[in-house]
Image 1 (tube, rainbow, N blue to C red):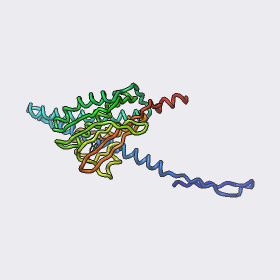
Image 2: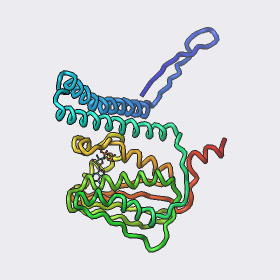
Image 3: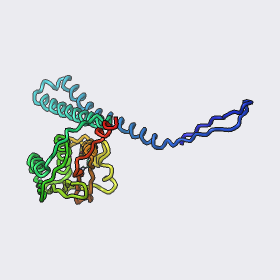
Image 4: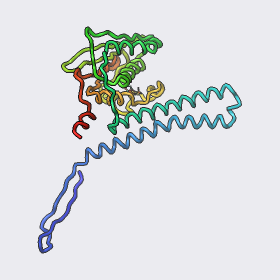
Length: 271
Ligand code: ADP
């Protein structure tokens, strides 16, 4: 709490009373702390690959270049660390556009049975590489949602990639559709490692990872689900998760059945 005192005077200039202004700064403080934590995270995530790039470059300049095989190996490492930084910057820029409300969606009708069959075909090879099964069970009737194909594809790919990444060999990943009141729900259910009750609500936070080292080693920026959530909300939907530790996780994309009025459309109507 912030307190401000100022006296006020009567006609003769004598103090008649005091005005006290009390301000609740807890919300402000929370936002401030979050911003600071975010900047600290970004700095750390960029510094790690930069340190690696720098040390391999120095070693090459110090003579390692003479050995073609070593040079090849080091350049490969430098290249993949540069990729990691590029992915991070790409994700950060996308989040910034959502924060600044600069995202415009190219909304069209998407028939989900067809869209998901296609997405599954594209991802099958990644699942098969880990001896996992990835299946889509088409819904009993047409499922038309209103979305930006590229962005919706990004969400589905992110969730399916996570299901593959965070499940061991032989796991199965099932995609199916249900409906609940005014929403279609797309479920991606895996039989992977699962997420504890404490971690579950936090996986949508920027840079939150249950296992940092593991996620980084697999090329994750820790921003994927935060972006996926922004995308679903910008479509008038939402993204939720259910999980049982050690058993598996289900990610659920919710799409309104009716074409939603998007936030920026509402703003523009008002103006
Ligand atoms: P990352 O780049 O680390 O994959 P995400 O934002 O996509 O970042 O996911 C955040 C964290 O949520 C992951 O690091 C992982 O710990 C957890 N997670 C996401 N999907 C799953 C899943 N299907 N099973 C278990 N854990 C998951």
